[in-house]
Structures are given as C-alpha cells and as structure tokens.
Length: 95
Image (cartoon, rainbow, N blue to C red; front, side, top):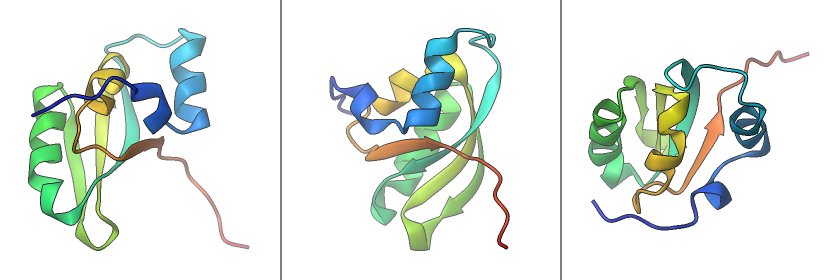
C-alpha cells in the first residue's frame, strides 16, 4: 500500500488534539472513523488490523470503516494513500 506524507491533513481537530495532548498511552485504543472509497474498505480493514487495531464495522454506504486503533498508530494509518480522512468517533445525541 502506498503512503502519502501529509497525515495530519487527514485528521479532524479532536483527533489531532488527542495526539498532541500526549496524556494517553500510545498503545491505548481510540475509536475512529476511517473514510475511504467503498472499493478500498477491505484494504483499510487490513491496514487497521496490521496496525494493531480492530475493525468494528464496515460502513460501505458511507465509504468508511469504524475501528478501535492504538493512538500511536493513527498517523501511520493516515499516511496510507487509500485513507481519505480520519476522525475521532464521538458520542452525540439528537434533540
């Protein structure tokens, strides 16, 4: 899998903040949504597992993979060319 060199540009602000805080253990898993094309979901899922993470859901209609990923592996995964963007999965409520 080819790599790109601008991983921070693919991350949302809360995920960047979590990386910069350096308060969590890099081996600690965080819930992320990895955006990609629907065709590359299997590749992204494999990359998540190779990075020490665990795929929770393949979101084919959204072109995304929901996963638990070690914090220390976030930038490496973001460097993968097939990864369009990554965001910290956060809980929300509908009013």
